[in-house]
Image (cartoon, rainbow, N blue to C red; front, side, top):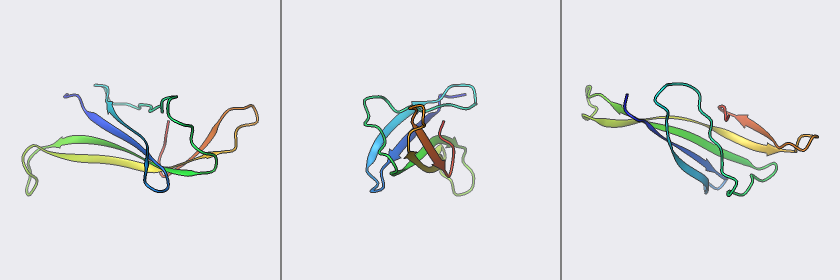
Length: 100
């Protein structure tokens, strides 16, 4: 299996990129996690952000699809940082998908 590439994008409510990163997927299918580096400012409390995760897949030629074309597979959703947990841990609320 060829090395697949993915892209993770996190945007604010004005569609400005907060974080964008290419991700090399492991050769074995499964669940992966995406972490935002500590160099990126923390998400603002009670503000909603949009995220998406895209994988570029090579599609075999069929019908009107061009030979060796790339078809994106995408999942997206929203995340909101909510009041911190009483023990001091940050809490996040996800809608429209899962963010691990």
